[in-house]
Length: 305
Image: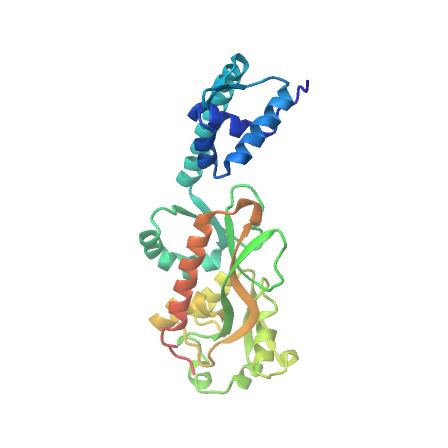
């Protein structure tokens, strides 16, 4: 006689049959056939080396061994059901922790946070800001929102939300504003351009998209993070390069203008989460973000041509 636990499916079939006192009802509850339950009961009896049921007229009656196993398995399955229910409730009650860059948080997310909380009240979103050091695989983080280029990591579920669109922006406070606002894009080759060390490819990518020589670009003041770069642009320190969603509010308010418009890059704004931690809330959030970005795409292109 084996001292290993019997197959779980056999125990489930027995527990349901003993609790309901019916093979047919057990089969219905387990969404299998009558024959499948009967086979599992036979597997269990052979594994244990004892009879668990005896014929009783047209039905079944538990043997003494069957009664002992019914009591033990019933208690065990009840405890499992209760713990699983608690875990499910715990997950539902826990906040959904989303990591994103500080610039994305401050310039795009926070202006929309009230609307998101109203639309998805059960999400209980908690935002965790970072710059280049966020990893959705680490404990305590449910998902990550970032601009990145495919291919995507094999262990990630990635929801593509919108193609990245970047373009040069400047403030009406900038000393070169009057001269540049009607000038062609090529005129920026003569400007010392504000840039960020976190996205060194941004200006060259924009130049390539606009059929300009990226090697002719002149980089001026550099900033460690995109947020500081855009604050410098708003302050009138020069022309910066920016993803469109991060300057939407500034364009609407007239703090920045985008005379040369925006162009797509190979990157996507995407929501990443580990496949092992698939969460229905992530799908809800991804759809909300996609709708919000889609609405932004169809808003008027202020100060661009």
